Image 1 (cartoon, rainbow, N blue to C red):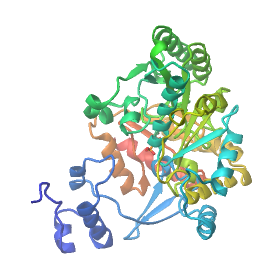
Image 2: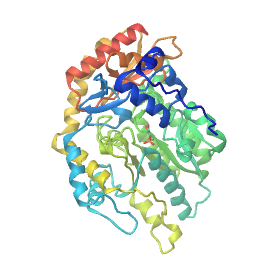
Image 3: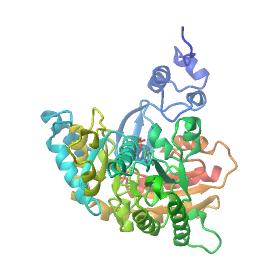
Image 4: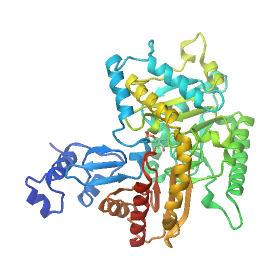
Length: 459
Ligand SMILES: Cc1ncc(COP(=O)(O)O)c(C=O)c1O
């Protein structure tokens, strides 16, 4: 017996067109997808009104559907495609690796790409974060960091440190451990009975500035709240996990780097590990290779994923300090970090990541981006000045603003309006943001900003 009714399948293009579905090749892929694929982060029923977009191929900053329509990827496809789609250099690195070694388990074995990648990620990191532990997606990196933090303290005789602290509005992924340190209601509330107790402290989000306060004042005020919390509860807290400089899912909440400097000092003083979740901010997104560098701090662990392979293959990584590594190095097996995933350190994914690092080095990407960021902010000036745009802000290669609108369905409406204008926009609530591939051209960015302005006009 089929308990869930299957989505309707329209046998002819005419029938599909009659109920407002796309027709042609797009329509066929859409129907097959609705019948067979359960899509992420989606209430599937909403696709009755807002059709899926079947994508046939990508090139540079553009995605193309099966019927020849195109979409400018303004969000780097969930923040991963740093160097656009179908990047020939990443592609050839993967093809070359295919001829050498596609996979070998990483327990008991090692290989060239994983060694070289670990060395290079550590060399780019602030301080000495020389021990790379691999997972696949971002949430896996969060899980690794959380387990490692607890186990670190347990190995040091502090097994009462069983809690974690995160910022209000934080997002660290959606597996149960990561969700426990995530503070976004729509993702969290349903599963709350399954989650460990969540402790949050106020975010330094600069939009929270009171009359006369600067972003730095907000940072100082939020750090005082962190200090007060840890002064009381540090005995039971293993780690403070934080998205450095920009809290993505909170609506691109940007804050003053001074907060991180203060947080580093407070965590050290209270024997609480500092985990920097750079899954979104890493790889140049906020202007420096890792966001922590801009604040001049060295966290105890850095979580990386998303841009690490430029959107080619799933890979994540946690870099940690010598002190953490040393706490696990012992004769007793159970003192070791026995966590594992089958695809840990997959050679193809590591080869893609090495190609990404080559592009950063060979194309002087951080400097080029610095200039692009200035030019693109100027191109977005008419959008920033729109009377319905609030708190227009920019850090590195991220631009965001809130739209003054009463539309309760604004995010979905704006997404659909974007598609109608050849744009891939994916607002978070009323926050519209751009997180373009670094390879986008000035003309393409001007088109992105200009057409988004038309949408804001109509909102
Ligand atoms: C800061 C941060 N941490 C963790 C994650 C989870 O990564 P993934 O979706 O790859 O599990 C995300 C994803 O958006 C993120 O932005």
